[in-house]
Length: 315
Image (cartoon, rainbow, N blue to C red; front, top):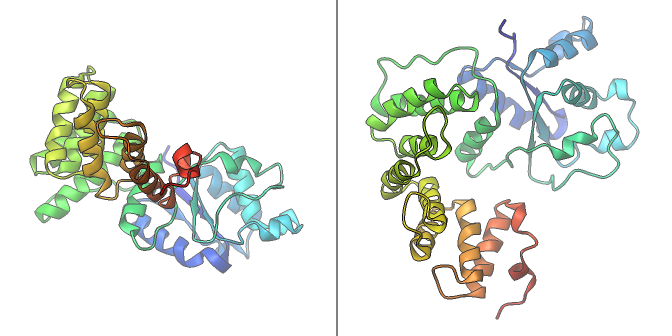
């Protein structure tokens, strides 16, 4: 039986309301049923309805502003700290908790109560106002649930139809409905979508519902890479680095990582920085290594924070 709500959004009114409302509006537009504002429940059995809504949802979005846990850590009574109540219930119900880190939120504080301390191990996208469309696209990749309302793709302009096919495809992909997703990707590829070419390559690379075929994967990555699609350029670089579906070639790996990094693909920045650091496909250059790794770190890629090159003073 289908849940009444797909997604629950939890936030503090002071600090998180505007972002939460914007995300809610977009998710609703895209077919999700979102539980967002609980004001209309205040005259009823608030606790019961609150917990019911969380139990119905598959995904739980948590908006993290700079002061989100201030009241919790200062000893606010649990029954009055609604965000803590919501988060504790979501964690206890094993919901897909997706934290969204706003500007000013740097890390989870020490001393979180035991019923919500597990949140520090959850992953989610960092909010980016300047590149909001990219942020929103990343957010949807964290969501497990397929929208309540199926997206109908008929009698639409070409670009919008292609966009909806891709969106629908990735939603189905994340729901592990691989055959249905592949149909959407093939339709979008026929309309000239580089994103769809990359998706089809991933199917062959990972073997989702198809026999794993690295040669076909590399071929489809190349189609999308030649169209300038950054993720495919990075993926093709990986193929050359590992010799998967193509002859192993460090220079080609470096070339494609550089193409993707220059298009602001953060993972490619990391790989390019390591190429410069270790002399993979290019002469060692610690200055360039530091530049690209530092740029990736500033873009939110925490895994490079302790790379030796970043701890060296490079002249």
